[in-house]
Image (cartoon, rainbow over all chains, first blue to last red; front, side, top):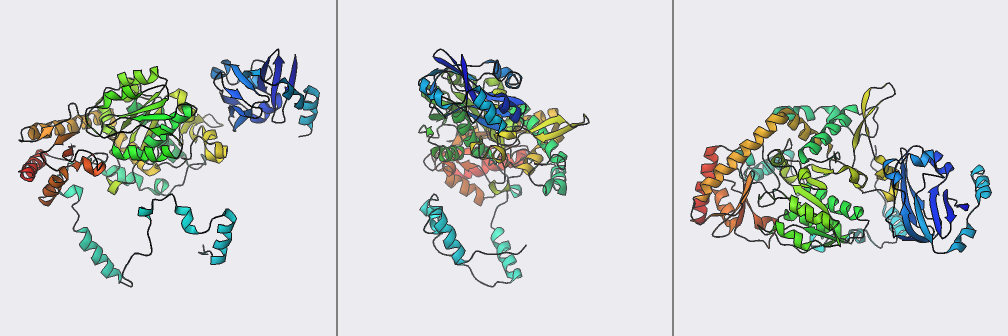
Length: 123
Length: 448
């Protein structure tokens, strides 16, 4: 099980043919208190880089881009009533959506945990 | 501040930058028939006194609404506005204040708008209302666009009921066409609103039904809401006379998802058709797709009650081109007048005022029913209803006006292709029994 990161601070964790997508700890800290998450419908297909969700904090509303291509198989219903889960557990219970990966090769272009850590330190 | 006009060279440079050959090209969206070709022929160099006299003579030809028996409604209503309303809205803190971005200096305006939103939500039976839009017709158009957003653009059609005010339909059609939303063909005809359920399908994002409708008919919204929800569509309920909501079951209690309408009738004068105030309310779960400003209640650092703009992250100044809608202006002063009027009336007062209106309309209907060749075509009404005359309603209105009675609005005035014999009549608390008798007599003479 490995997790990959984008320069826009999304992560995707690969579980078999499925990619679980969320935003990083760095992103949730920058956003501040998350008050609302708008999630896509199950069945929607995204190309890598498409707008997949919107995360709204007390400061801003920001787009969440799909780190890889795929079709949405599940979205995190917890976020509907408890959007603050994104702040409490960005890498765990605060996941946004699950995608059926259509091109596992796309993962190679993303950063692994160490690279992403170095990337954030450089910001 | 000095006025520094652009030189022809400035203009050339700007046009070249955006790739447009002439300034006229920027106005191509305006229909050619509405564009002015050349200058209007006006006399030069008249004295102030001459201008004043000329306008005084022209305005003396008008028949003012308050000077004669008055029975026009159809979207703008004449009610008594207590003097307190005008006195309070003229205070410079309200009258001259700009958009309330800064809560530290605009608590008064923010609180007034918060109270306004509360009143609109209570009247419509909805969870949440915004701080107002321009007027009822643009609120209606924005509601259709909002339904399109809620459906994430996957349902391209909107269905408008035949009883929707034709000008509301036109405003909606105009805005929707720019966004690729299809609007069903419609005719303004009485007695057919319940048939909209036959037009709802999986591609329908919303159904727009006005109650009381343009004919004054009160529509049972519940079955329409049920049919809409079954197809995954929203019910948008529209009203032009908010006072009616004090007498009938609010649309929110009949299953409406968005309620929009005109607020002019309470606190705001006829104003020659504007400025008016658009009311907009919706269910809580849709609030993030709602256009316009929202004022919210909060507490400051010391725990004291205060008011701020809330949900601003949807708006242009934060979310730029991704904003929920382009609307960030509200009719602040008219909204304030609305709120002061309702506050003065209170709960019992507004119910009593609604009852007076209904009694006046019933009295007029009873009298018109006895007039030969006049048919009342509205079955259940609040303070306005439609009658079918034996001939042209526009001619009858002109004849009545010549005899000192403003006797209503011909439907054809709102929609030229509609039945020319239908006259829309409204009676409010501002008319007395003698006024109504004068109207009946004038109509008899007009159709004789």
